[in-house]
Length: 479
Image (cartoon, rainbow, N blue to C red):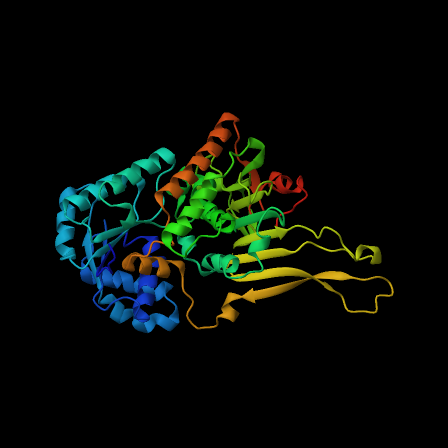
């Protein structure tokens, strides 16, 4: 059923995600008149606020995280906010919440961010209070379980009262402009798609590097680790977008059908094709940082780094390795996709002393959003001592190509799509289950072979074994 909600219910409304991302995103949408004047936003969490005190709380968050250019919209935005304290383990609290929300005849969107253990009581409480009807849709923020089995339990609980077309599983990477531009790059330009296959691409790299350590996520992260925190969702979604077949249409069903085919084609990873690490003390940007165990306060075998050599067993990508790498306490913060093309089959310049380097496409996702294509060009000169060739980058910086004072964050698009009912940038259940199937097999292999994280110095690019993972194939990481 298509409808635009006039109620938005935010669970976890006092948490870090809400302060840094959700409230600033909603205020930006309000500032640009992209949400209807009648949309009411109801925050809920365990914190004991009333409407006025929550608005004061929200003002402090917006003063801190909202860009200065938008701060004139804060007063008007705060008028949309209401608040109702809630303990999800107390069913009667949901009745009080329903009273605070009021009528939902025009439709309601729910943004649910909660601990996995609270999904079932939360869904049951919403149902009992009459907040799960046909004109209610729900967005689910990760973590959605820690394995295939626990993910299925959560999805079963949600799907018992919400049909799949009303469930919006969130991966905020899909809301990033450069990630969406990956589809435009592939399917709106004739020059790339004929080359986008094993005959012309040697390998693909996907890197998500962070300089931070645990910050405020120690409890969650130590139970998850890099594989489940980053690879299971963000990295596999990026891989699916790179590797998918052309969809028939730009709509939710067509795009997600093609992504799930990719995820199901992932080959089970051999133990020698993964490297895990955990950062020890070191330095980043000249500042000393503690090791993971010191930061955590006790010894742990949780991986903070993982590198994987993945393969897709399908026609388009047979024999092409996909190198995945993510870690904390890396030398720099970056998320990028590297498409390494094959070398020309015969260089006509070799007899004149010139060496041709294979073309490379680098898609930067964060912190800079850019696309760089490296092409070979002749170095100017009379060439009496031979011809010289050199790679020349063609750069497209998104900020320059689409100049404007207002830069959007991923949650703006995702929240607006949730309110309006557009599922294209959300993850379907069969995608999630295909991702978990592959991840669970990797973890089972680690357990079977007693694989534990290798130490790496904070401020480095991970264990040396990660370098060997690519170099034994004649490749190297794009650092």
